[in-house]
Image 1 (cartoon, rainbow, N blue to C red):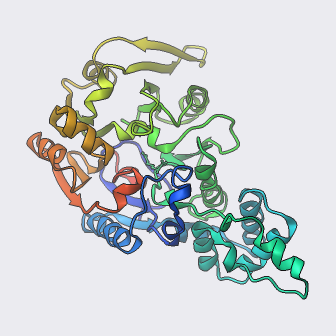
Image 2: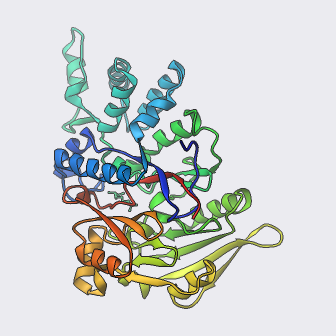
Image 3: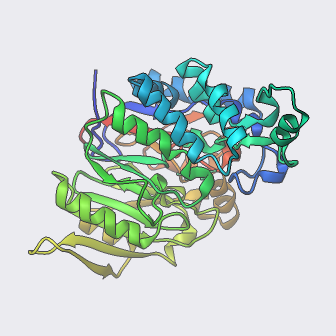
Length: 407
Ligand SMILES: NC(=O)NCCC[C@H](N)C(=O)O
C-alpha cells in the first residue's frame, strides 16, 4: 500500500487518488447565488452521486485506491484540541458571524461525531438548522437575522479536489484561491497536511496564507523535471514566481516551470480546462487557445536565482524541446470544429484524467473529442456526465493524485 505523496508526472500509473463524493452541499445551491458559488446550474444530487460512484468504480477497476476527502479530514482530527481548532478556524472563515450565531454554530458542530461534523461543514448551515433556546423573543429575532437563508454558505465545489491543493513530487502546494467561496475549502487541506499521520510531513511548496492566487487546475506535472503552470483567470503570475522559488530550489527533481499564459475567461478558468496530457507525447488541447498562447520558461541560473525567458514557436515544438521528445501530437478538442470544440470544451472535453500513459478517463458526453483520442491510439474509459458536468469540471478537476508510479 502506498503511503505519503508521490506525483512526478501526469501519466505515470495512478495508484492512489483523492476524491470527494458530492453531498448535501449541492442541495444548498439556490438560483440567486449560483454565480457567486461558481455553478451554472443545479445538479440533481442523487444522479450526481451515481455518476461520481461510477467514476470511483472505474478508477478502482483499474487498480486505483480511492480515498475520500471527508475521511482524510476526519483522520487529521488527531486530538480533541485539533478538532476544536478546526471548529474555531472554520467559524473564523465562515463569513461575518455575530457572537450569538457563532455560539449556536459551535454548539451545532460540537454535538456531532467527527464525520458528521466535517460533512456538515461542507454542506453549509441553513439558519433553520440552528436550535435557538431561551425565553426572550429577541434571541429568536436576532438568530433569524436578515432574509439570507444560510448561517454558513455551502462548499459546492469540493468535488473538484484538484484545485484547493495540489501534489507535486513528494510535496504539496496548498492554495490561496481566487474566490472567497473556494478559499474556504483550503482549510481542510491545511488540517490534512498539518495533522494527518500519513501526510503531515509532506514538504510545502505554497501556502494558503500567500497573498496571490494559485489553483490546482493550473498545475500540470509534465515530467519529474518539468511543471506547466497556467497564468489564468485563477492563477496570478506572482504566485508562479513564488512557486518557482520553492519547487525549483527545494524539490529533488523539478528543474523547469513552463508558465502558460492563457486567456482569462470563465470557460478557460484553469490550464487543465484547455490542455491535458494523455500520453508521453500526446496532449488534448482546445484549439482556441493556440493562437493566443505564450509560454515562459522559468529555471534557476548558476546563482540559483529564477531566470525567465519567453519561448517563441509552436506549442508542439516547445513541448518537444522541454520534454526531450522526438515528436508531439496535439489532439484538438471537438476534432477542431469551431462548434464541437466550444461545446465539448464547455463540458470539459479537454479535461482528461490519465491513469497511465495513453489511458484516460473522460466524460461520455464529449464523444467527438473522445473519438479523436481513440483514433490517436489512446485507450479511453468513459464515465457518465450529465449532472457532474454542471459544475464546470471534468475527470481531472475531480481528482487529486496522491500516488503515481514514476512515468
Ligand atoms: N480544475 C478545474 O478546472 N476545476 C473546475 C472547477 C469548477 C468550479 N465550479 C470552479 O469554478 O472553480
